[in-house]
Amino acid sequence: MDQRSSDVDGVPGLLSFASFRLAAYAVCIEGGRVLLVRCVSPEGDSTWSLPGGRVEQGEDPFDAVIRELAEETGLEGVVERLLGVDSRVIPPSECRLGVGHQNVGVFYGVRIIGGELRPEPNGATPESVWTPIADVVSVWRSSLVDVGVALAQTLPATGHVAAVPVGGLVQH
Image 1 (cartoon, rainbow, N blue to C red):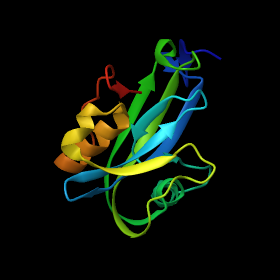
Image 2: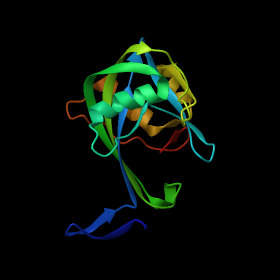
Image 3: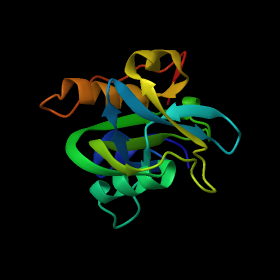
């Protein structure tokens, strides 16, 4: 199924997409550092991101973010606050599968309370590191990192920050 412009729910010209994902992300900041995870795609591409991922059917995003943090990093955390929500649309021309995709991410400020950093067992996250926030701009990363850090640093009342342009070191 491709992205198409048609009548969706009675709205003429509304775009529909072949895939949609609701995800929850942990923004863990301590001592001027942010926790990043290195994600490896099935094709072997590596990108730094925030701990987090898909909210399973019937799961609360609040619970999903803590589950994903533990699965990917080995760390235990508690949600301190909702930071915001980001919706990104990836057009077919920029999507790996050649079809449109929409990702809605719920970002939480999370405080680490225990555990030890470790790779995700049998997973796509082989490494987690605490990275100085000032150094984030120099790593190959998902735009989710920039969104999460901006939300944590500015705490906008609306829970929304400007879209992050992709290109260079910043990927979808």
